[in-house]
Image (cartoon, rainbow, N blue to C red; front, top):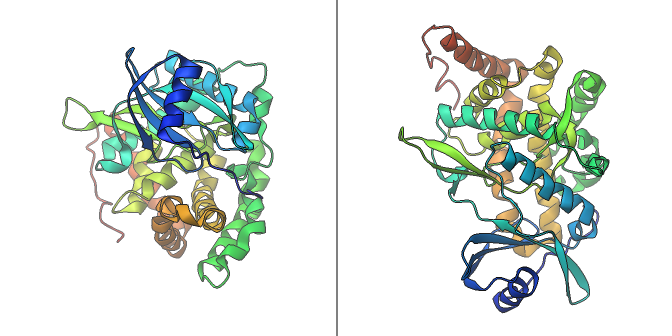
Length: 361
């Protein structure tokens, strides 16, 4: 994050030429797709098949080993029954001006992002369950370069919350700066000393509302049909993935405080938390809100022309961060853990109620 990551800026005609040259396919339809720092295109081929052409930003393109690991992880999840993309061919690179960019052609997955549908308790439960299944499968991944995923100074890792301090000046004059400083202090004092009690794993690291696709199911609800964007994959902890999932689902729900219980119940149907992980969940969710806010503000200083996209999550997150902070850990955890307990009660034949719904506005 210390320097500008050059976002590719290929024209449609250049992309058509790229697809022909690198993948031996002829586009019949092509249009751009949104991206935080890369350049993405939808491609339908005359020869058959639908794809996403992903041109990586200049910084990520410097590490082809990391890109290859991400591709391998997606394929491994796909083989194990999770709806991840697979690569059409191995990563290639292409020159463009004075920059070099890595290029991947991935299968196109159908569906809408989960941000566009109502987040019912059942869908939130499925999000938690899918996130846990994903990390459990990734734990079995074998690759000679797995150590590359340790990414020690990766700014989006929840292990690196203290690194946010170097960007705090972007909040100068904002009353939320004191909240962020307090969260970082809580992280240092109440989370960091407990890492030896967390269970390690590989994290997707960005299991958010724009990286999960859904399609209608036969019961008038939705099922998860796609998991996208493994660019933030890193060696982390199960509790990190859960905290990230809860945080992003909160930003898309009219009653954000209630979200955590449903996601937690889905997660624990696969991977029950230990006591230390439960103790740290609240601060880790707050920490992710702080990451989103601070790093989005910083990214806008580097790429002001992309402000609308960069601030999507953090604009909503500001209000939820303040709400969580004002309610406090005890109040929020009570909602989360009581709600999650109702799912286990229902499994034992006890009636499921929604008595905590609507408590916070």
